[in-house]
Image (cartoon, rainbow, N blue to C red; front, side, top):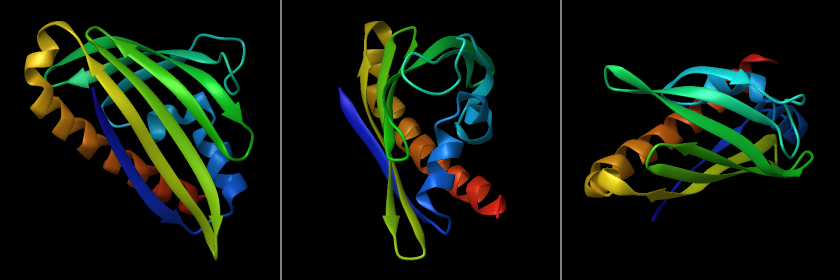
Length: 145
């Protein structure tokens, strides 16, 4: 198991940031390496909301699923993303700061099977992905102004 995380300041109110990231329909706009995503639950935000995804891994895609597992309106949420050989338990926290918000994305990653042999490479790529995701949230939400 390993952890990844990234934090950015966003020049928008916490409610705007949270509204954007908590909506599964917005995942394609900020999630790194997401080739496609389709909401498969009746709701697209709140506990139990789910989507099926295709994750780009080099020249191919792999199937994945994502489900919101905890939800604190306006403040944070947790989710579980599953793909073959990988479980990612992620957390999103949005906090007020002078002039805007602090957005933190973090998670614990568990690998199984042959992927365990690639842990150093996967860790580096996932940490880079989390940084890119935080930067994408910042860019997208600030563009909504």
